[in-house]
Length: 352
Ligand code: PEP
Ligand code: MN
Image: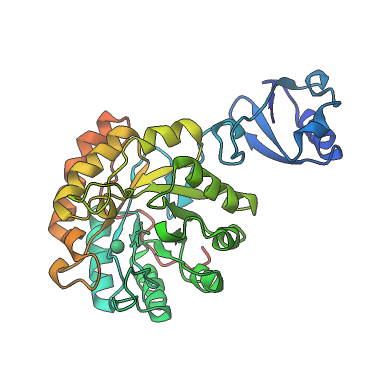
């Protein structure tokens, strides 16, 4: 159930509404907007049956939440969630691009990639240290060494870093090195992991599972939020279908559907969706047209020699062209592409 306040509700009114709900044994979640506040009630709604909520001062409306997800639902928040990241915001006017190699392969390649993508407007460096690979014989990442390389590159370049966490036992370690924790498609329903990343104070980039419905994705976000972490970024990265011309099938409709259901920011990953470098441009344009708040793109100094996902990785030059080509599409969607390196390109501590 959600309670929407009047425009004139005072802080005392809100406190009293909250106390009544909590006295009935439910938890409350407050979302303050410019004109009104939304008080979300979490728990057994039957217990509120005898509480005269509508008659309390400051209450404008009391509405049921029909969705199985609550904290993630659009009606639970007074406006879209904006997640601060290194001087910008995910979910704001700027399209946030996270770019970098599939896997961290070494110091030099990471440093040169960070510099190249930052110069073109990327606002975060991506790179896997722990890699989920379909075959156990494939390169599975540099592990802790990769995390250290990411942290070092972060302090040299000023770019926040995004990296995948695959296991509950690694959450603390990864959170100590990275700015955003990525939960990959293969782990989208690893509920223990979702709860664990819900307990840290780092934004979580939650990628859609390859056979997950959008409801499954939103319920996975709910697991993270339910533990106290409100900063979840959803990411459409393609789903498995019968089509085999592309690595996955980019579900462009996921973006507007999610936007209609949730206040959380929605990104798209055209690299894993298409699996081919030549598709990154068209899929990125489609994502922006559909309302995506950001893109995650794989970029490598020399894609043919990449240890993972070389076929879908862009060269520095291709990334430069992509960013320039996207500008008019972002404008047409009422957004803007970032230009040049971030203003905050300075040394920051990992806890920043
Ligand atoms: C990745 O981002 O490198 C990755 C493994 O993505 P996904 O979980 O979407 O396959
Ligand atoms: Mn990859």
